Each structure stands twice: as structure tokens, then as C-alpha cells.
Image (cartoon, rainbow, N blue to C red; front, side):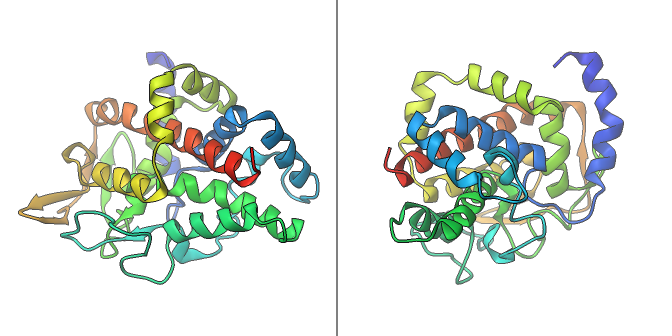
Length: 273
């Protein structure tokens, strides 16, 4: 995106970041991920997805449907994973501090979508939910800590406004890929190398969560401060400067790309392709 366009976006970015509790990537972020997956999925998978989507009364396309669990918010505990402050990451497919989390949501809905016995209505709900969960697990602050609600209690100032979680959901996405979903998908797909695609697909949901957790703990994210083994809550507010945006732009782009590539693999597997 050129410098002039970025400058024009900042007023809108600041406004969007002020909006209420964050919902794990903005709607455009979720749609970008699902459109990447749809374009990468095998032809038979795309046909199966389109057949299921024909019966949906709200969403016309799979990419549009991936905002489903946020409008209205459903299955609230399954949008994120909470870990201990001194956690080294996930070592199993269980949720560390709850019965359900985004990890189990992915695994459970993938089973429903794969089932030959499940009714199409149930598979449609699983499809729309699964696309969302795969997006959620790649938003770094959705694999984080309960005390600050994944950065919702950490304020930001500077080039974005509101809280840190909302900044990552909205402001950073808009800065990284711009406002046009189709253009963003084309650009992101065009920069994925065959080596990256192979490497990203050779992983499981638990690995995706641990990657996000590592980003959440990274110094340039500004989410927490490391004191020994503990990732303590960030004090005060985080300044979102031009340097912060530039440093995290490639992180946001890669997380969107990874999510799309991996979702395509999950969908191909679920539809037997």
C-alpha cells in the first residue's frame, strides 16, 4: 500500500480501534482468511462448500460466513485460549484453564464437518464456525492471559486508539493489507512461496496456538514484560507508533496467510479431498 493511502486510513483506523470489546481479527480479517482458504482449496472442496452455503439464509459466500460466531457472539469461551503467566505453551490438545477453548472448537467442528452421518444443517454451522476458529487461533492475543482479557485491558495511544487487542483486530490489519478484501487476498496469495505453504501445512492446531503465543510474548508486540519465566502484564498503555506498525506489519500478513493455508488443508481433509 502506498504511503499516501496509509496516511488517509489512520483517522478511520483510530475510530475502528475504539469500538467495544474486540472480536478476534476484524470482519475483513476473517473474510480474508476464509477467501484465501477457498481459493486454495481443491475444486471438489470448493464445490462441496458452495453446496452447503446454498442453504444459508444470511451469508452468500463462505468468506462472508466466517464472521458468523461474532454476529451475534456465540460460544464465547471458544474464541480464545487462556494460559498461565509462566506457561511455556500448549503440550496437549486440552484447554489449560477451561473445558472449552478455540483449540477444542477447531477439533470438534472439524469432526462434525467431516461426518457422513451429520445433517447438512449441522455441517453448515460447523463450516461457518470452523473458518472463524482457525482465524481466531492465529490472532496472537487470542492465545494469552485471562487477567487482562487478551489485551482488552491494555490501552493504546498514537496511531491507533482504544485497547491493544482491538488494535491488533482492526488497526494493524488495515495498515498491513488495506481496506479492499479481494485485493488483499490476491496480494497475500501472491507472496506465499511453495516452501512456506508446505511448511505451514505440516502442523496441527496446537502448533498454531503456540506460534500465536510466541508472538503475544514478543517484545515488539508490547503485550507483556518478561520477568524470568513470567510474562507480566504490561504497565500503563502501549504507544502504537509508525515504527510499531512497520515492525508488526509482516507478522500480521503472515498470520493471515498461515491461517488461510491451514484452513484450506482442514477443509480439504473434512470433505475427503
